[in-house]
Image 1 (cartoon, helix red, strand yellow):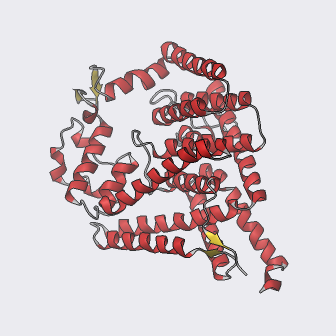
Image 2 (cartoon, rainbow, N blue to C red):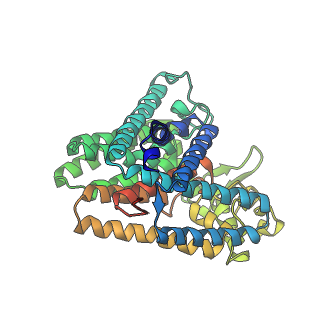
Image 3 (cartoon, rainbow, N blue to C red):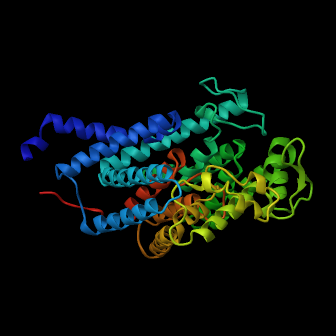
Length: 428
C-alpha cells in the first residue's frame, strides 16, 4: 500500500483532486453544468481516497453524518413529491461529501495558501470585469449590462445577473489572503470599499445590504485605530448616499423600491400592467407572500416538512390562497427566498432546529474565540462569512440549489478550517 501511495499514478490523482478544488470558484461562473461536474469529480476522488484509507473520517463525524442521513430518509419517506425530495437530498449528500473533501484539502498549509491566493485574484478579476461593464457598456467578454430593471450588471456571468451575489458571498473569503500576507489596514479597507462599490453598482439589493452590514461589523471589531474606522465609514456612507441621490437607477433600486416593499412608501406598486396595489406592510410584497406561504406550509407539516425542494409544488395549493398578502396570487416560486423559511417549510422543525443550533454554535464559538484566542482576524472573518450567508433577515437563493448551495458549503468548510475543527484521523 505504501508503495502505491508513493507511485506516480497516485501523485497524479492527488494533483488532479487539488486542481479540481482550486477551480471551483471559476466553475461557478462558467455555469451549473461545469460546477456540478466539478463537484461530482471531487466527490468521486474523495470517496476513492476513503476507500484506499488515505483519508479516515473520525467516528463522531460519521455518527453525525448517519444522523443527518436518517433525517433525510424520513423526509423523503413523508414527502409530497418523491422525485423532487430524492433529487434535493442527493444534492445535500453531494455537498456533504464536497464539504469534507474541501476541509481535507485546506488542512494542507500549502493548499490553503494557494487556494486563498487564487481566490483573491479571481474575485479581483470578476470585480474589474464588472466595473469595465459598468463604465463601457460591456465587459471584456462582450457581455452587456441590462436596463430592464435598472442598470443591472452581470460581469463574466453573461446573461445571469448574479455577480453581486457572487462577490458578496466571497468578500470575506478573499480577505483571508490579505491576512495571510499581512497587508496593512489601509489595503484591507480599500479591498472592502472597492468590492462594496462593485456590488452596489451591480444593483443587487440583498447582496449589497448584507455586504454592507457584514463589512461595518468587520470594521467595528477590526484591530485598527478608531479614527481610521470612522473615516472609512464616513467615506462609504457618503459615496453611497451621493450615488443614490444623483443616480436614478440607484435611487429607484435601493431607496424607492425598498421603501415600497417595506410598506413605508405608499406609492402605487405595479404587480402587472393591469393590476396596481399599495403595499401597506412587507407582507403585501412578493417576498412577503413567499415567506407567509412557507410558514403556512410549515404549520401543515410541522415535524417533517413537506419535503426537500417541494415548495415550488405545494405553494400552488388552493388553501394557501388565503394568506394575508396582496401578492397572494404570486406566492409561488421555486423557493421562498429565505433559507430559514425554506428549511422550516420543507424540512420541518426536525431539520430546522439542528440547522439553527449549528449556526448558533458557530456564531458563539467564533465570537468567544475572537476575544480569547490568537488569530483574531480569522475568527472575525468567520463571523463576517456567517453574517453574509446566514443572517436571517435577508432574501436569499435556495439552500438546496447548485449556484447558491455551493457558497454555503464552501463557507462552512472555510470556517471549520479557520476554527481548526478536526474531522479526520491519521491513516497508517
